[in-house]
Length: 67
Image (cartoon, rainbow, N blue to C red; front, side, top):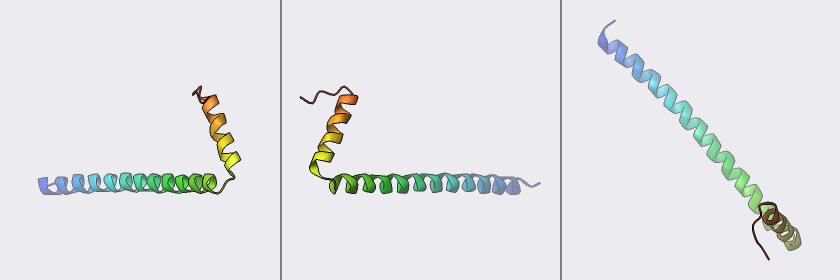
């Protein structure tokens, strides 16, 4: 094999690995944004007592002072 052929194979292989990684990262970012929107709208449309009690209980679980 000529050196040019070996180099083109290596570049092709590296390009494929990079695009798989970027697709995976893009998918994770989209999933995180969808999850964030679900949480935002779930809390935004919940009655105030429900949101307050959930936040209050979470503070107690993590030993965060809230009183």
